[in-house]
Image (cartoon, rainbow, N blue to C red; front, side):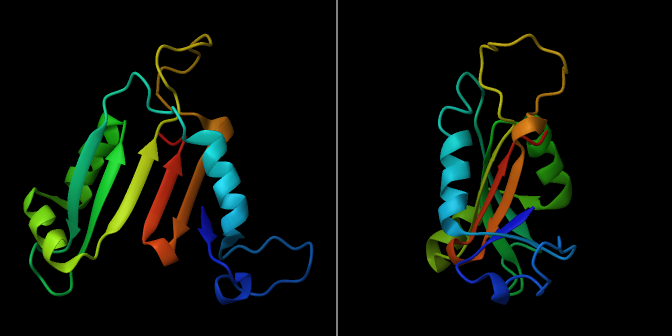
Length: 145
């Protein structure tokens, strides 16, 4: 998982050059854009897209955080139903406040498959990318099942 910000040292702990930190992995907005453009265009082709309006906390609570997730994974839909409160009422709250987290997720395997299917669980482990972009209130997830 990467955290994408303009300033590395406001994001992750300072470590010596050449040392891989364990508390956060930083990526620049420019590099994130390259990685995203390499993965996302066309990645959901032939798949069902799901739109998930969710609340982390009781819907209507001043402490709750709201988001909308786009995904091509029915497994992610079911997991979001377990972990969050999924409801169309979230759209009403977002419309009033304008504040919400945008999440885009894809298993990264458009259909029809061009290569032989080796693993019958839809994912793309060779190109997996998960990134939090706090300045844009955006989470990108590619290749995870």
